[in-house]
Length: 429
Image 1 (cartoon, helix red, strand yellow):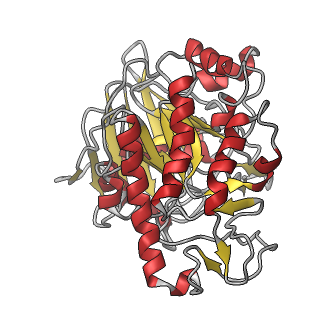
Image 2 (cartoon, helix red, strand yellow):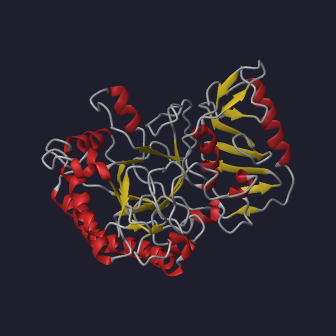
């Protein structure tokens, strides 16, 4: 979200927020009790990188700056494992930021079919995963290889032997390589199988256990599907210990507090759509009466190794028309940052390409640690920090611009500067 700091927005948003917050008594949402790991760039907010692509030239200062800015980096393990020399990538990242958490993107139930053709002398990690999964492949009711996404093959992870074979590969590389991951990002944990709408090459119905009953009609299979997720998290914990971070993608942890309690983090993919099925998802995410609101869900997670890692992600780049009838891109990283500051979440910033790449916020803030919880008065949410204030005024609650916000930061003279704001009418300078 560029060019947002205008006098027009400053006056309009702050006047609205301060007026709304002047009444009493004011209820307080429980403080998520966010931990503040040593080395964070700012105790105000943690920033994550979720990068599915090549890391790029880490010797380029401009490239490295994007990764060094992050508190947590989630990327493919084959960026560090699989052939000699890859460990240097992790060494460079840790040299740039010794406190960063580096998390491996790990598929919980599938392997990519192209890995079957990888040369083990060049891409040994991915090839080893494929070989480990191959004996346990699942099929459809017509005998086709089961897929949930184009180009992948699902294996029967409800089988303990299949889970053990996959974990054996990851644990072997983790223990033998100088590039040590801080944890894994499981893709994905849903209450039931999810099949991409982009998948057009598979025939038949999914049948993980091969009993001839389609997955979505097989209550025993769906129960085993969910039980295997719990087992996988516990088995990983048993292999690599309590300090090894486990973050879940998918919808299950976002509403299942018992399951989330096994994890260190969870990702709200395409926030606020995933996790808050509502016509007004932003309003639902901050509604203290909703059982899985962000404040409550933050407290479900483990805190053993820097957690909770409650991540708000949205790679989309919507456009809004300004007062001059010109379409302008809306940076969802900035919109999510306002919500994250209230809720103690971690936010992902993007570079406005619409892809998963590392990015740096256009407007940096440093308002210190939160001084307490969030006060709520009607549609106004306010949180005080050591050196600033965050105010979110809920509007329609719809995506992408269902609320306005203002972030103030104390200057050297002790006054308050408005460092970033956006209003529902989306006026640019």
